[in-house]
Picture 1 (tube, rainbow, N blue to C red):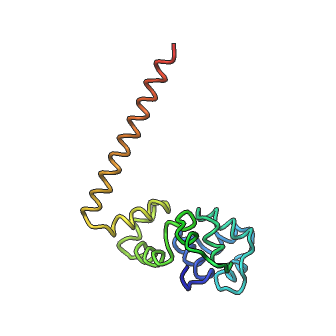
Picture 2 (spheres, rainbow, N blue to C red):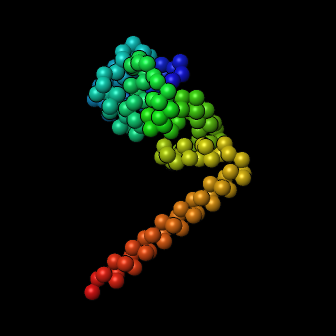
Picture 3 (cartoon, one colour):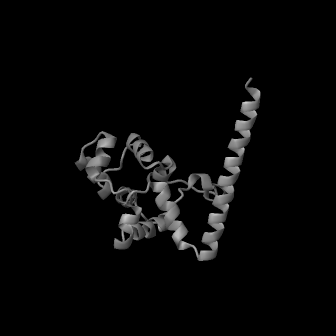
Length: 160
């Protein structure tokens, strides 16, 4: 975890979704002023608020808990990718900067979070890697379609 605080993390998350403090506060069933205190660090959000934030942003609860708890991390824990978010703290700043540049605002506006992340990382790759990603996606889609067609054929043969 970087030197970033929970307050900074909450603010960056909210901005990456283009949510207002009022909107987030309404999902937490608190006042905007209370939520503002979360983002300034005057109040540490209770566990139920962190839980609701994890649902709102569709990220693991552990991301918030890492900012609020201190513990001894062993190497096994730190290498466990299931605990880490898709977007690391260092990447979050770059991601926010990228999607908020004037030439990208409209491009990213209608995309959901996962699509934004995909496009952000895709654009960071060189053209050879981009071609590899596209080839992989074509194969995956072809295989998925083939699986569905095979299931359909089997199901049709089973029906009288």
